[in-house]
Length: 183
Image 1 (spheres, rainbow, N blue to C red):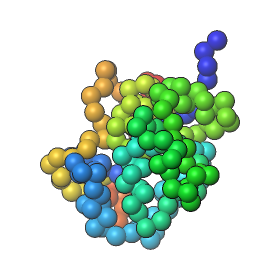
Image 2: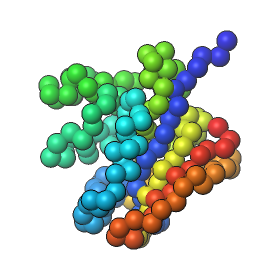
Image 3: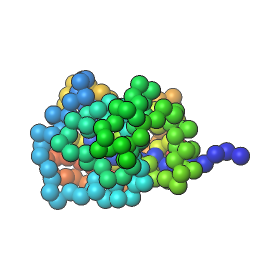
Image 4: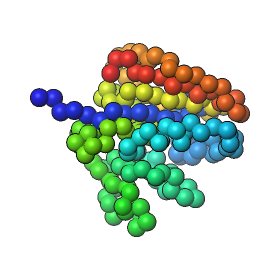
Protein backbone atom coordinates (compact mmCIF):
# COMPACT_ATOMS: atom_id res chain seq x y z
CA UNK A 1 0.00 0.00 0.00
CA UNK A 2 1.32 3.45 -0.93
CA UNK A 3 1.98 5.63 2.13
CA UNK A 4 -0.06 8.83 2.17
CA UNK A 5 1.64 12.22 2.20
CA UNK A 6 0.88 15.64 3.54
CA UNK A 7 0.17 18.29 0.90
CA UNK A 8 2.65 21.10 0.17
CA UNK A 9 1.70 24.73 -0.38
CA UNK A 10 4.11 27.46 -1.44
CA UNK A 11 3.73 31.16 -0.56
CA UNK A 12 6.66 33.25 -1.75
CA UNK A 13 7.72 36.50 -3.32
CA UNK A 14 10.09 36.81 -6.24
CA UNK A 15 11.62 39.52 -8.35
CA UNK A 16 10.12 39.89 -11.80
CA UNK A 17 13.09 37.94 -13.16
CA UNK A 18 12.40 35.01 -10.82
CA UNK A 19 14.80 35.45 -7.90
CA UNK A 20 13.77 34.95 -4.25
CA UNK A 21 17.00 36.22 -2.72
CA UNK A 22 20.34 37.69 -3.67
CA UNK A 23 23.36 35.36 -3.98
CA UNK A 24 24.15 36.02 -0.28
CA UNK A 25 20.49 35.23 0.75
CA UNK A 26 19.82 38.94 1.31
CA UNK A 27 16.22 40.13 1.06
CA UNK A 28 17.06 43.85 1.13
CA UNK A 29 15.38 44.33 -2.26
CA UNK A 30 12.10 43.05 -0.81
CA UNK A 31 12.30 44.88 2.51
CA UNK A 32 12.73 48.30 0.89
CA UNK A 33 9.06 48.46 -0.11
CA UNK A 34 7.59 48.65 3.37
CA UNK A 35 4.42 46.96 4.55
CA UNK A 36 1.05 46.93 2.84
CA UNK A 37 -1.20 47.43 5.86
CA UNK A 38 -4.23 46.34 3.81
CA UNK A 39 -2.77 42.99 2.78
CA UNK A 40 -3.47 40.07 5.09
CA UNK A 41 -2.91 37.32 2.51
CA UNK A 42 0.07 35.84 4.38
CA UNK A 43 -1.86 35.70 7.67
CA UNK A 44 -4.83 34.06 5.92
CA UNK A 45 -2.50 31.58 4.23
CA UNK A 46 -0.67 30.59 7.43
CA UNK A 47 -3.95 30.24 9.38
CA UNK A 48 -4.74 27.28 7.12
CA UNK A 49 -1.35 25.58 7.45
CA UNK A 50 -0.50 22.90 10.03
CA UNK A 51 3.28 23.13 9.82
CA UNK A 52 6.09 24.98 8.05
CA UNK A 53 8.96 23.16 6.34
CA UNK A 54 11.91 25.35 5.39
CA UNK A 55 15.40 24.94 4.09
CA UNK A 56 18.45 25.70 6.18
CA UNK A 57 19.34 28.82 4.20
CA UNK A 58 15.89 30.29 4.81
CA UNK A 59 16.09 29.27 8.47
CA UNK A 60 19.42 31.07 8.92
CA UNK A 61 18.01 34.18 7.22
CA UNK A 62 14.86 34.18 9.39
CA UNK A 63 16.94 33.75 12.56
CA UNK A 64 18.42 37.17 11.72
CA UNK A 65 15.00 38.87 11.85
CA UNK A 66 14.09 40.99 14.89
CA UNK A 67 11.60 38.34 16.01
CA UNK A 68 10.59 34.81 15.03
CA UNK A 69 7.60 35.32 12.70
CA UNK A 70 5.94 31.89 12.90
CA UNK A 71 3.32 30.60 15.31
CA UNK A 72 3.15 27.10 13.84
CA UNK A 73 5.61 24.22 14.30
CA UNK A 74 8.64 24.47 11.99
CA UNK A 75 10.72 21.67 10.48
CA UNK A 76 14.09 22.70 9.05
CA UNK A 77 15.46 20.33 6.44
CA UNK A 78 19.21 20.06 6.81
CA UNK A 79 21.93 17.43 6.74
CA UNK A 80 24.42 19.81 8.39
CA UNK A 81 22.42 21.43 11.23
CA UNK A 82 21.38 19.58 14.38
CA UNK A 83 18.87 20.35 17.11
CA UNK A 84 21.75 21.92 19.04
CA UNK A 85 21.82 24.70 16.39
CA UNK A 86 18.31 25.80 17.44
CA UNK A 87 18.22 28.63 20.01
CA UNK A 88 16.79 27.68 23.40
CA UNK A 89 13.78 29.97 22.85
CA UNK A 90 12.78 27.97 19.74
CA UNK A 91 13.49 24.42 20.94
CA UNK A 92 9.75 23.69 21.41
CA UNK A 93 8.74 24.94 17.98
CA UNK A 94 11.67 24.20 15.61
CA UNK A 95 12.81 20.70 14.68
CA UNK A 96 15.85 19.96 12.52
CA UNK A 97 15.47 16.87 10.34
CA UNK A 98 17.38 15.18 7.54
CA UNK A 99 14.63 13.14 5.88
CA UNK A 100 14.17 13.46 2.14
CA UNK A 101 11.08 15.46 1.07
CA UNK A 102 8.82 12.45 0.40
CA UNK A 103 9.76 10.75 3.70
CA UNK A 104 9.14 13.97 5.60
CA UNK A 105 5.71 14.49 4.00
CA UNK A 106 4.77 10.88 4.84
CA UNK A 107 5.97 11.39 8.44
CA UNK A 108 3.99 14.65 8.77
CA UNK A 109 0.87 12.94 7.41
CA UNK A 110 1.20 10.17 10.02
CA UNK A 111 1.57 12.89 12.68
CA UNK A 112 -1.77 14.41 11.57
CA UNK A 113 -0.14 17.41 9.88
CA UNK A 114 -1.76 17.56 6.45
CA UNK A 115 -1.25 21.10 5.12
CA UNK A 116 2.44 21.99 4.83
CA UNK A 117 3.78 25.46 4.06
CA UNK A 118 7.00 24.89 2.10
CA UNK A 119 9.48 27.79 2.12
CA UNK A 120 12.95 28.31 0.68
CA UNK A 121 14.14 28.42 -2.91
CA UNK A 122 16.07 25.14 -3.16
CA UNK A 123 13.58 23.36 -0.92
CA UNK A 124 10.61 24.49 -3.03
CA UNK A 125 12.46 23.23 -6.13
CA UNK A 126 13.00 19.86 -4.47
CA UNK A 127 9.37 19.54 -3.36
CA UNK A 128 8.13 20.53 -6.83
CA UNK A 129 10.39 18.01 -8.56
CA UNK A 130 9.09 15.31 -6.18
CA UNK A 131 5.43 16.16 -6.96
CA UNK A 132 4.77 17.32 -3.39
CA UNK A 133 3.34 20.79 -4.09
CA UNK A 134 -0.38 21.30 -4.65
CA UNK A 135 -0.67 25.09 -4.78
CA UNK A 136 1.68 28.03 -5.34
CA UNK A 137 0.99 31.61 -4.30
CA UNK A 138 3.61 33.85 -5.86
CA UNK A 139 3.86 37.58 -5.32
CA UNK A 140 5.92 39.21 -8.06
CA UNK A 141 7.83 42.30 -7.01
CA UNK A 142 8.45 44.92 -9.72
CA UNK A 143 12.23 44.77 -9.64
CA UNK A 144 14.86 43.07 -11.80
CA UNK A 145 17.80 41.68 -9.82
CA UNK A 146 19.75 40.14 -12.68
CA UNK A 147 21.18 37.39 -10.49
CA UNK A 148 20.49 35.65 -7.22
CA UNK A 149 18.74 32.54 -5.96
CA UNK A 150 16.03 31.33 -8.32
CA UNK A 151 12.66 30.13 -7.09
CA UNK A 152 12.18 27.69 -9.93
CA UNK A 153 15.07 25.64 -11.19
CA UNK A 154 15.20 23.00 -13.88
CA UNK A 155 12.35 20.49 -13.90
CA UNK A 156 12.09 17.13 -15.64
CA UNK A 157 8.93 17.97 -17.59
CA UNK A 158 6.36 20.70 -18.01
CA UNK A 159 4.30 21.54 -14.96
CA UNK A 160 0.80 22.72 -15.77
CA UNK A 161 -0.76 25.30 -13.45
CA UNK A 162 -4.28 26.67 -13.20
CA UNK A 163 -4.69 30.28 -12.10
CA UNK A 164 -7.09 30.36 -9.14
CA UNK A 165 -6.84 34.06 -8.31
CA UNK A 166 -4.79 37.11 -9.22
CA UNK A 167 -4.68 40.48 -7.51
CA UNK A 168 -2.83 43.73 -7.91
CA UNK A 169 -1.35 45.04 -4.68
CA UNK A 170 0.32 48.10 -3.22
CA UNK A 171 3.77 49.05 -4.58
CA UNK A 172 2.91 47.43 -7.93
CA UNK A 173 3.10 43.89 -6.54
CA UNK A 174 1.03 41.25 -8.32
CA UNK A 175 -0.01 38.13 -6.41
CA UNK A 176 -1.00 35.02 -8.36
CA UNK A 177 -2.42 31.89 -6.75
CA UNK A 178 -2.07 28.69 -8.80
CA UNK A 179 -3.17 25.08 -8.47
CA UNK A 180 -0.72 22.46 -9.72
CA UNK A 181 -2.56 20.28 -12.25
CA UNK A 182 -0.12 17.45 -12.86
CA UNK A 183 1.01 16.44 -9.37
